Length: 296
Ligand SMILES: *Cc1c(COP(=O)(O)O)cnc(C)c1O
Image (tube, rainbow, N blue to C red; front, side, top):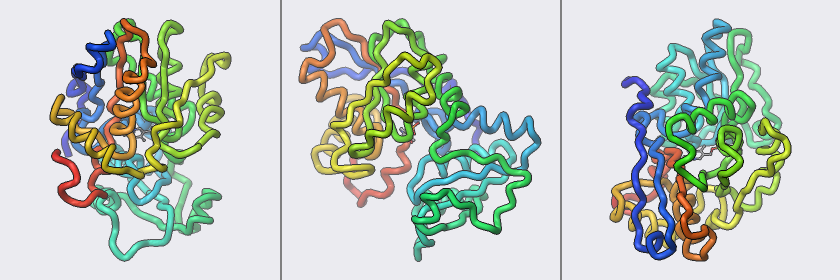
C-alpha cells in the first residue's frame, strides 16, 4: 500500500458568486488528498495512538465502529502501514453481506468481531480478544491523544490567514484539537453530523486545554440525522463539484460545505471574513449511495 504523504494536502479556493457578493472568501483544506485510503482527519487523530503502540511494543490496535465507519477503515489501513495487527469491534450482528467499508478493512487484515447493539453500547469486549499486547483506541479516536493529533492539522496552514475555521463534527475530537491549536482571534465552528446530539458541547469541552473556551457547534445541518441525505444535499454536492472539482461526502463534508454556504447566504459571516473549511475526507462513505447519485 502507498505511504501516507501529508505533502499531498493542499488548500483550494472555494470560489462562488455568493461569497463575492457577501465580501468574504472561503478555502478548503484538502485532507482528503492525504492518501487514497487513509484519507482525511482520521489519520491525524490516529497518529499519536500509533506512535504510542510502537513505543510500547504493542502488537495490535483494537477499536470500535459501525458498518460504514471511516474510523474503522482508517485504523485498518494505518495499522497495516505501521505493521500492527488491527481488530475491529463492529456494532450489530454480522450481516449476510459485508459493507464495502468492512470488506476493505478485512482485506487490509483487520479482524472483525460483530457484537449486538446492546453489547456495543456497553463497549463490552468479546471474550476471544486478547488485550495483553493491544492498544485500545476509543470509538472515533475520541480522547486527548486523538485531539492532540487533530491539532496538528493546523500545522498545514498559516492560521493567521483565516478568521473562521469550520469543520464537521462526529465525536468532536477534531473540533477540540482545532480549537486547542487556534488563536483567540479565530472562530472555530463545528457543524454536527448528528441530529440533536447536545452532549457534544460537553464532549468537546472535556478535551480542551483552555477550559474557559466554549465550543461553538451548529446543530441545524444534519439533514435528518447521521448519514441521512436528500436531493437538496446531493444537488449541492454535485454543484460544488462542478464549480470547484472538489468531491465531498454525504455524512460530513457535504453537510459542512452546505452549512457554510447557507450561513454565508444568511449573512452569518461579516464582510472581510476569511473562512477555512476542513475537508476531512470520508469519501469512501459515498459508496453506500445508489450508483449515479453523484457525478464524481
Ligand atoms: C470522522 C469524521 C469526522 C468527524 O470527526 P470527529 O473527530 O469524530 O468529530 C468528520 N469528517 C469526516 C470525513 C470523518 O470521517
